[in-house]
Image (cartoon, rainbow, N blue to C red):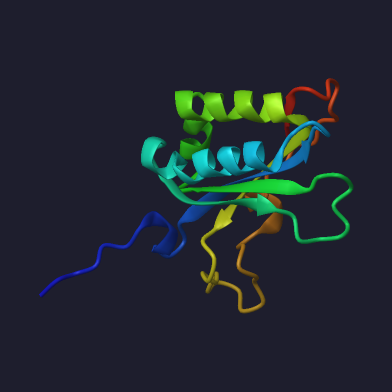
Length: 150
């Protein structure tokens, strides 16, 4: 009998951490340069440990306020997300984003894995406690050519 091992994101009560990077490309940034960036982003899961999933592309919303592209990085947990921030592949990504974008905003959130419900309270949402699980810090961009980590 073959038993499937659950990934941490599938285990009951396990938290996942997601980093959202909103990009405002420079007017001189070409579609080819953005395609190259996103191709590199798609390969990050091979180089950064505990990176579960990656998404990148053009913003489909008309309310983007100039942030026309974005990147989503889903990690096993918050500790592994923070470890990834010092990984050379992540640092290279930041450098490339800085080269291609006037502005980038990073948002990090952690909470229980999607689909998990806290059984202690029938009225609970996917996240057991929004106040306890959601950790977002806001910093206004001081220099438009650097990545702002919030």
